[in-house]
Length: 87
Image (cartoon, rainbow, N blue to C red):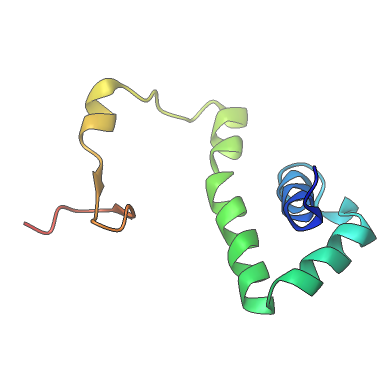
């Protein structure tokens, strides 16, 4: 990748999904130079949130995603998922 900051974010995501203790020191330095502590925590939590399905898949407890399930999902005007339709 041409942008070292983007490469560092990709390295963070890869490490959090596979081996969190193996994030290269160069990536850590680039992340700390380019993002606030709050932004780093937010990125890490979002990556972990979206990887929760790995546990369910590994245990065979994941439910199939059907067209009906997707049709029932609701997003607000900002594109954020909402748990219940406010109407």
